[in-house]
Amino acid sequence: MTFLRSHLVLNSVYFLSSENLLDLGPDCEVATTNYGQGPAKAIGNAKPARLMLARYANEAAAAKALHHFRRIYLPEKLNGPKASLIGDNGVVAIEDGWMGFARSGRGLALVFESPDEASARLLLNDFTRILAKREASRE
Image (cartoon, rainbow, N blue to C red; front, side):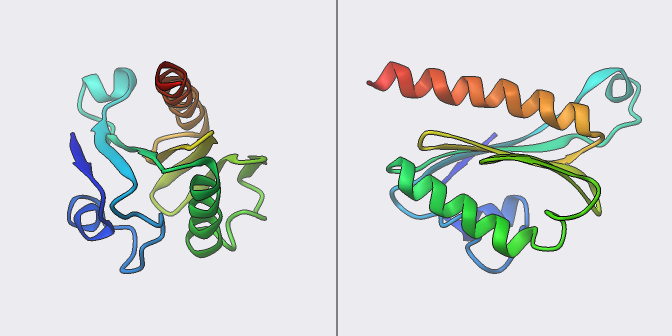
């Protein structure tokens, strides 16, 4: 697991873009890790998914970061046949598997390289619950 606040550090761990797509900075906290999934992983047949949890200074900053990410990283994918979007949540087929995103308050969960849509959704659901619990415990 890696904790970071800078897109430069993120790109050394998992390259997204030379641009700061997630609007990372000193007021944002990010944790990222690989996550092996299911029976295929147990026998060495599946590449692990990349998970990222980000917490921004406020809800507006998280919404702005998600909008920026979607606009730059997924412009043509969001209207494709393999995209499922509801508000600030979505799962999209990309070149290296499925990626998903979900915003909950000032938190943002991202999944990359998931083997299928169902796995991406399951991971997003789990991690948005974690984000919501963390926010509730801080209030």
